[in-house]
Picture 1 (cartoon, rainbow, N blue to C red):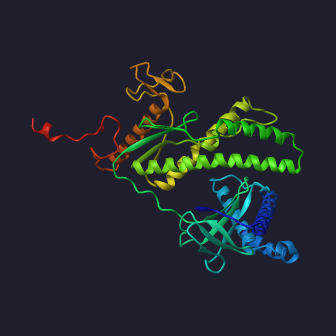
Picture 2: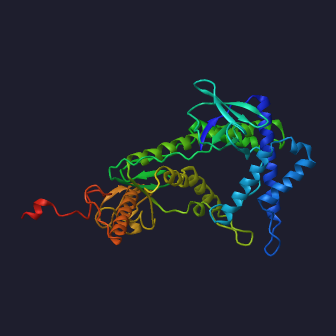
Picture 3: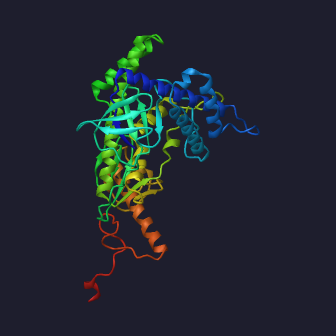
Length: 410
């Protein structure tokens, strides 16, 4: 998805908000229909049946008929895809969409008929949205020619964006035969086997203080008041700034890894399970709920899952996931494994050989070496020869070195 910043006029913004409201209304109706279904009963209506019901509803209600049929049908299409993902086990069950938080819609059709894009100047372009007209956006890069649909969204900071659906080309491998290990953490967002420690950006000190003040004012504001609405927008702007910084850091980090290394090794972590709430139930309440909530926020702020997702997009076939067990307790120098090696969160001291290193860097090197060993074992099993000099090699050289000419001559 290539995203651009929309710049609608007040009148156009009202039209865009109307499209968002119609899409949200249709989506929530589909969620309600699915909620009434029970095992053993007649199945909930599918996409085709829902489209027929939408046609009847548009004929009966003028406010719904005033909206775009394409926007409303695509909301049903998105819901059908969301349910397919849920039944496939890759996503959670789709839930209700809320005003002010889930604002957006999708436009599908042939370019030039249902919608169109044109460039006005070096930095300004326009996109034609049904029943809204030509809306300006910031032309930060060329719009691909093979786009078949786009999505318009509004974040909690009040900013509008248009995203054109296109699959970007993956980053080309450098061809240097290098493998890097990446250890994801909380204090250090990403530690590389090269020794680099990367930190995801967050709020600055003054921004964190201002966010706390705004949240306290929001707690005292009357629900439904204009003051509460202004405070929510101010908080949304602060959080959007933090999200933009984190996304920019994540994109630059993953692009750098894909450009400088032929192979990238990460731990195979279930981030969704690790960030699950510890509240428990009324019958069996959880323990240390607040501490676990803080840890969950720190994990999500470090972008553990997004790092791997973007690496899969940018370096397909070059990302290797390994078993995370014992990577933080094993000494990279001698291989001795015990929890006593980890003196603290940041310090690693092997009790067997005395090797000292940053704990996260030591784990990243173990991740890299494990990935190299797995690749060598896989290639040996299928009968392929592993290159000695240009293959993925750990520090100190490859273990499976071929006989050298000077050794053969003796």
